[in-house]
Length: 377
Image 1 (tube, rainbow, N blue to C red):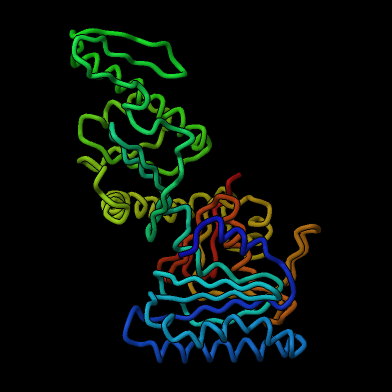
Image 2 (image 1 turned 135 degrees about the vertical axis):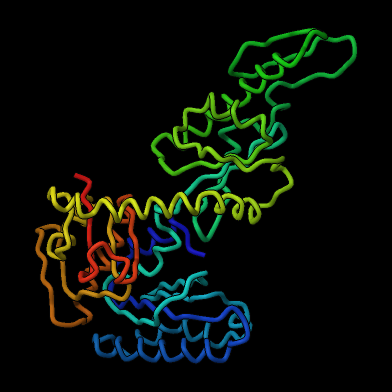
């Protein structure tokens, strides 16, 4: 499934004759139907390339990876709810997605990407820290996915590697690290000493993570035994630690289970944020901090001004926009030379750290409009 880095790569890709295909698929049992739907999409893409003036040989080359995918019978046995395919001269990429799509084929000088935003959106992004004395694991997650993040060069491997505890009888226990002075104690070591060691250990972990998280704002869920949560929270410099941890030793819980438990806590939190964003739109608009006008939304998205964008599902707006001179032209229909301006606004808002909601008309803050925006400033 697509991640933020891949999305940004696709968004940055510009060129001639770029094809975007989205189709709904079944998880199992409908391979023939799914292949036929994709075959029809490739046929439509071929017609679009011809209309755009692409030479026949180049059009065939662009669509060849799609034809190879179509002919791979094993591929169609293991799908999910949606499939997207992107192709251009010397480039192709596909993703099996856990969300369904409206069938759509697009051609232009950039890829159509807004249908992917529900699985990437900042409105469901979170961190998960699996914390124990034996192991530290860190994940980045969303509603549909969880991805491990490599932190080996930032934090201690475990508590023992930090303190190098010695259990040899009749000897002093040795606590030390390269960053701190060594501490020795004898058999009077007790509960208070253990807590102080945990504090030192957690500070090392937190300081390492903060090198990576210093500008981040998503909530972070801790997975740990009960007594570790208040200790870590009290020393952490990360301000968005979620108040409801995942209890129990996380060492033997895999990422799928941790994701399920994290989302059961965070799902209501993100839903509430969405409700609050919608509720404040009217007030913000009355203070000139929001708009429903596409002629204002498109430039605002390009210039990093939008904090929240509400986009009606299925809404499209053909046209051209040149951010270098702030020139916007809304056209009568789609062609190779123009683009979907609402897709452009959604992608730019996401790339610039804003929240994008794809909504049914009845859910929109202003139901009669294709888009609504709340400004940052």
